[in-house]
Amino acid sequence: NMSGSEMGFRPFDPESSFFSYPTSLHIEEVSASIVRSHRETTQYRPEELQALRWKVFSREEIHTYQSKSVDEMWQHCAVRLTDAVQYVVEFAKRIPGFRQLCQNDQIALLKSGSMEVVLVRMSRMFNTENNTVFFDGKFAGTELFKSLSCGDLIAAVFDFAHNLCALRLTEQQMAVFTALVLLNADRPCLEDRERVQRVRRDVELALSHILLRDNQESLLHKLYQRVPVLKSLCALHMEKLRWFRQLYPLTVHSLFPPLYKELFGSDTDIQTLTTH
Ligand SMILES: CC(C)CCC(=O)N[C@H](Cc1ccc(NC(=O)CCc2ccc(Cl)cc2)cc1)C(=O)N1CCC(C)CC1
Image 1 (cartoon, rainbow, N blue to C red):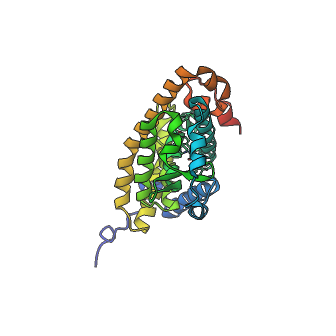
Image 2: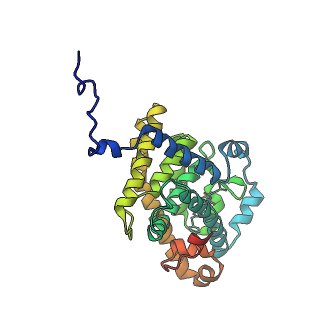
Image 3: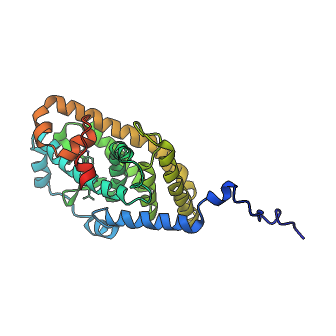
């Protein structure tokens, strides 16, 4: 008969790292709690978006958007963007371990990660059949955003949403993936990277556990491959925003939502993020 160690049992050794390794029950709890937070903070459930799928803007409605001035349309999108970011902030606060990070690190992770999560979540409201994204209650094609005059950015946003949508992530996979996007220990200005890494480790295990259970381990590699594209898309957003702010400083200063400036502006005073 096989000896104890051959059968995979280890002698009890409280000093070994084995006992700090989270149990699969703990990992189940982490993924269940992240999926619940995701459901509570995504504004629309998949079945609702499915039902709205073919509500597209009429030619007249598209024309109305296209006749807006550049700064008017930017302001309109900034409000929508801030709205989406607000829900991501709520989601982050409910990720197990996030609230235990120091305030500085919570803000640093949100400043650098919330836009990325908005862009990942956008793939949930993308219709790959007619290349439209959900906006203002209906589905819109790229032509609707013409007056933003940043066609390259809009094309990149639609491309990214299309490719991610094609992976057909389940809500659970999306929930845990977006938690991983936020819990990035390599972000700038973090005070306690090891702490972020520890919180991240359980979420990494949760994602592998979910993909293994769904028999979709190949998805892990595909998701990690999308991360650099996500980063470049955010960088493009920031670049365009700097371009816009140079052209319309007053609009950004007085008409953009405060949260927007805190998150994407350079000024560090972050009141809205931490209070609500
Ligand atoms: C009801 C919820 C389920 C929908 C949640 C949701 O994800 N909404 C997004 C948020 C959003 C908004 C704008 C962008 N980017 C741009 O418009 C590029 C130019 C730009 C950059 C910066 C500023 Cl300040 C202003 C304009 C990205 C994402 C949304 O409203 N969208 C999707 C993407 C298109 C391009 C615009 C409309």
